[in-house]
Length: 597
Image 1 (spheres, helix red, strand yellow):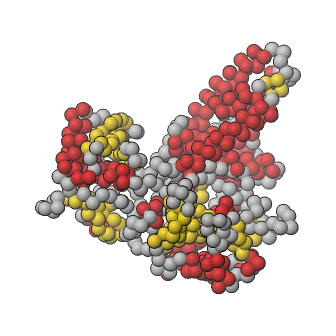
Image 2 (tube, rainbow, N blue to C red):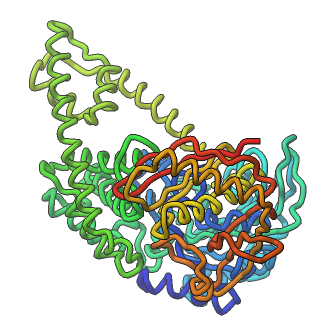
Image 3 (cartoon, one colour):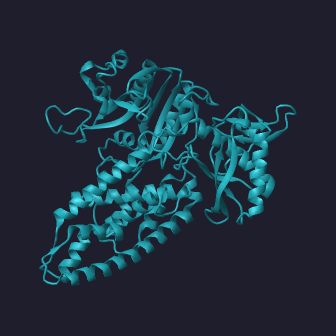
């Protein structure tokens, strides 16, 4: 079974079980700054997991593109990836553990025809706060899984929650025995040696963690699952290395050709080829979703991935620009599933070539600095580890390049590798802590302040259209409890008079205390009714449409397709104030605004 067949089989299986299909959301979250990228299939569903009714009902299924970079330094093993595809099915207050596990077992053993004897699972063993998950254990026993292949593990392995407070619960992870020899006699599914591949995770959201650390049962219990396309494809192809599957092998072959080296020539070469393949695949998808390399947020992640791939390419002996050549293979591999890649092929190629050119200039500057530092040391025999790390961090110099340049210039000079590694370790730890702020759980803020600003964004967009013209359309937004950001199509800077007029109109609609009404409609009908949408975004067959209208006359001021939530009446919003207006790309403008009491 090929990857495309896996995607189709999963979707069709759950459609037969009463699930509705939702399209993959873009990698960059909409209206959510709690995470840089969508890192799980559940992220676009946050309001519905918290109780908002979904327009398609209580059973959903999707194939979601995801990106995780908190463990970027671990890329290079046979099954780690930054970009990956996640198949998922959800129950929003409908079925729970017994049904979810039965679905998983049926799909794996009947549809994929995996050997039931090679399936192992882990469950939550309980602790002083929450009891042993006996219900999950009984559900696995009920489908025929022997008890000796059910492994109770602790909170670090089999518990999921959004953060210090909020919804969470136990999970059960499903593993497949690859047939490798175990690393030790008591090797079990949680081991990272590669004998067991985790292919599916069922999260059971049944608890709410309170500020005092205790738990209470949730009124709406949810099921959130995730199956990795890459790992499952490897299993279906009988392989224990994701990078040798159809999803990666053409990329690896291209890198092998560019470097004139074989994939499994040595452990180091294999690892470097995996890093290049992974990073440039991820970079291609990020650029296709509208991000360009920069030094902030998503742009910084993109730059880091591209430059790390370039550095690994140099270590393989690729001494020319090559990233765009690899990206062309990525586009060809995935364009049928993700048409945005083909639509943005030129942009992907151009951005990678420009970034590679910029990085070459940076390396040249770093080389000049390195030469000056070597000259300063005179007869010294030690090159500072901290200085070596600064060159690595600032100019992208791999430590091997620093050692090589020093050896060519002054053979008696050695790099303090212990000092370098200590600086690197501290930097990685700091990066991991920072990443956790963005990737810890993905449950975006649903406070009243955020909901108010969300509603104000609708008033803002319609006011922009009335003041500036009907060409105005949303291209992005982000909302925190403190302020909103709204990106839109417009060819020029707003004048002070235009800004004042927009503020005045929004505040008038707040003062009018308009009614905010939600209806679930077929997407095509919503378009016919001229509900505003985000150009280029994929929408499901049924959507929520929010109308903001005069409660007396019924006259509609704003109508948008949106997931919500929103306030019931605009009168509670407060005073709307634009605090900044700026360019955010060619033909695009950005507004920052707040609500004052």
